[in-house]
Image (cartoon, rainbow, N blue to C red; front, side, top):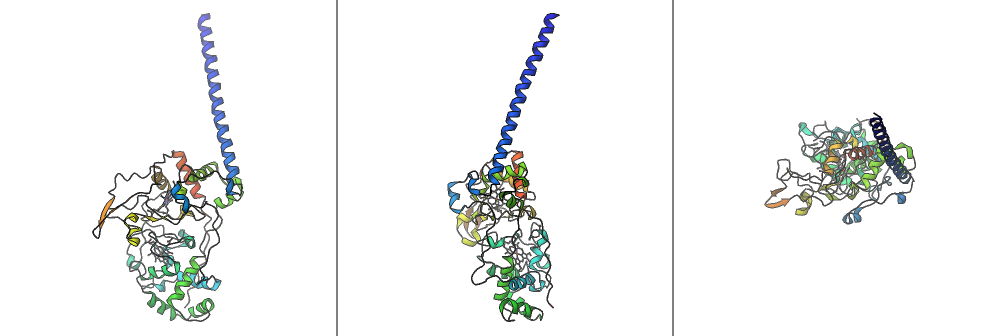
Length: 388
Ligand code: HEC
Ligand code: HEC
């Protein structure tokens, strides 16, 4: 009996000793983690990006890289400087469906400020409710894009604005006809006069005014901007870790860098579906360089939580899906990756930056939490009065 009792005592003592050690080591772990987080929080919210931990970048990404941070001031081109009156004229035209052949579709139909300046559809519908073949891009912060559209086929906003007017699936009009219609509307005279000095309406002036307005569409201060400016407690631990992962283990900054969160390059992340019915040759259609098959412009990520569905074809419906896709390094197993276009064989070669990241579920959640901090409170945009 005595023997049994002493055995019970010994077992009890050993178990509680082990238990104590174990919880000590867990506590040590927790303490280590929270001091790591406290240190990260201090560095990232120091107001001085030079104190931030070094980003993980591929050497090939370095020439196009600049650190993420605030958006710089917008640059207006010399031949189309900003004025309040010009931007107001541009805004009015942007909302005016009379630029379209049917008098039904305005730029704002597909680029709606209440929907993150896009339309939150997989593909937009335009004239006669015809569907386009690409996801409408948000035009928020478009003044920072160095080329426009998913394939970068246009270099300036001035040049861009007449394209949807002409596109038979979008507004199905003609910029000259549209200019003619606008010129007949008495109420526009004063707006053109204030913006350009006299009441003459021309397609060149229409393009310039719309472009000037578009350059004013930039987002305000996001939670991210507040955090890096020193408001250390606006970020949760998950948001903080997400920021750190974005710059390090997840390697997003090989492409999504600068205050605009894009390096303005064209990259192939393996979304072109070459060889299928939905194939999109991307940048190749512009350059005819086979190396560009399947490349798309790296989109900026500010306000990205509001601009879904995502990618050039709107094929991803949640941000978790987008991040998991990167985490797997998009193996493209199930996709055909080649096609023949006008007699030329093209293969989709995924960028070397897209690789297996093996993010844990927790890390995926943290990255998503961070992406959501790039949003601002939706602003109410006052609709302009359409001139009669
Ligand atoms: C029927 C829907 C529709 C209408 C109407 C429309 N757009 Fe778009 N917009 C799109 C789609 C879709 C894209 C992406 C097309 C592509 O990449 O090929 C786009 C892209 C753009 C871009 C490029 C953004 C970037 O980051 O590169 C700008 C700028 C733009 N539109 C401005 C306008 C203006 C100005 C008007 C009116 C004159 C207009 N859009 C009318 C659907 C539309
Ligand atoms: C190789 C360059 C590259 C890397 C690395 C990269 N991206 Fe992208 N990203 C792109 C390109 C290009 C697209 C557009 C692809 C398309 O439209 O098919 C894109 C699209 C996106 C979109 C959708 C944006 C929209 O408006 O539809 C999100 C969100 C995104 N990336 C987040 C991330 C995150 C998070 C990481 C890191 C885990 C990352 N990206 C890493 C190049 C890259």
